[in-house]
View 1: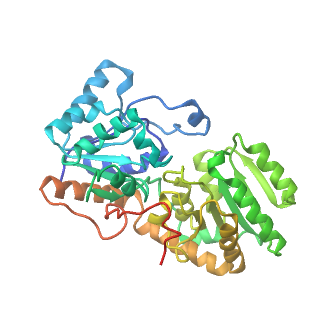
View 2: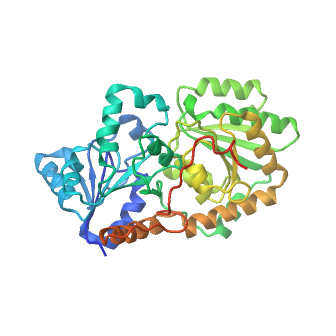
Length: 393
């Protein structure tokens, strides 16, 4: 088994801690996480970065000595995983052709026009295209990563693995979660996120108003703050949903997870700019019946439509309305869906499995043999385009 693995990323946070803890449990002092910059203020205000910093974290920006150690780790570790971090950390490693995993959301989520912008085209060529034959592989944090890199002249051809972000798994049993969700006679629908246009919370308000008009009884809880808050509150008032809607404001990640544990239905409405969508992962892990936008990166990886959740056509309030109505019509069916989602996350899509499989695949690659698991993390990330939902057979 490999003895040394170093993970580089911009900053350490709750999305990475569970996976890193598992890697540390297996590799001990052979695992390091290099944090390359301080966290942005807006994320700190959202409750990020409050975790106790583990001993395996090295903050390269704090001193010249730390930066020197980070560069040594980048050069000498058996395996390097690089997320959002400066390319200088892998420059020498690429020359030495040592094993690297690029941990990546989709590079072209804003559109393929980016490849025709000269400075971006140069960056794509240097970072991805020119290194196609090197020992560099891609951990795809989203289903559309592989198709974006295919468009970049077949970068990471046959080297793309399914991956994602792996928050701490739910510690409660399904029986305990089911009891939490059963405390109210009214179905609880939950939405969480920053109030930005790309998050499209307006779609849920429209779908909820239609469901109310059709006679369904429910409570709507909306967690977050942001620039769209006034507009969303006006929509709720104008739609006659005020009596059944609560705006919770910002909650910490831990508080948000508690709200998910008590929710029956979780809805993610973001457009294609949602590279991954950790709330989808967290809603499934909490045993909610998740209704997810088709263009979030996590959706094709984590949701089997009608079995472990529902998928609606991104940006389409009518499509969302149909899936929401299906959940409200068949509360028991929605509960069974939530249980299947919970079991999937407990058994397959979790930090323990991801860490173990990353080490296994690394061992195989270092021995000169490519290897993909059959399903879940570290299975093959097939080419999936963002219009996959419309192209179903």
